[in-house]
Image (cartoon, rainbow, N blue to C red; front, side, top):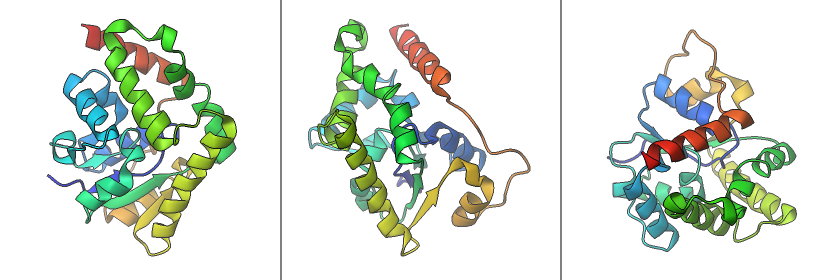
Length: 211
């Protein structure tokens, strides 16, 4: 099944809230890193993709949408495989995004000594996908911000032609629903995965995977 929606926004740009919103609008299931953490086959497939052997059919089997990492590191290629998909860039001010990223995802990857041995494959995949693919191997502030801005610029170019939506959670349901051609729900837009929730989610996912 080809994807209908592809998220171009890096993790920590409101992607978990976007996942919840898309599923509420009927575009679920929506792929997100939370589906990958405890799935050995997903981890293997994303590691293969990072090494230049992507199987997007296998990766997104059963999914209608995909947001967050890992897809955000590959979205132009995923779009080539699902050319009719709609692109959504979840936006966040670059400095604000870096503040969050550098206190959540980045230290999780860089602190190799803290990687649980039985979850090492997941952490190695994170390093391949996020550090090497999305950030071009850069782990310094300037390099990370340059990669973030370059990713935003690619989506902005598509938005000029109406082929992508630049979306911030504060915009609420209306622009998202208008872009997707669906009715606006009579409820608040989701607001999930704050920094404390991020670490709780990672810890829970690792523990569940360890079984």
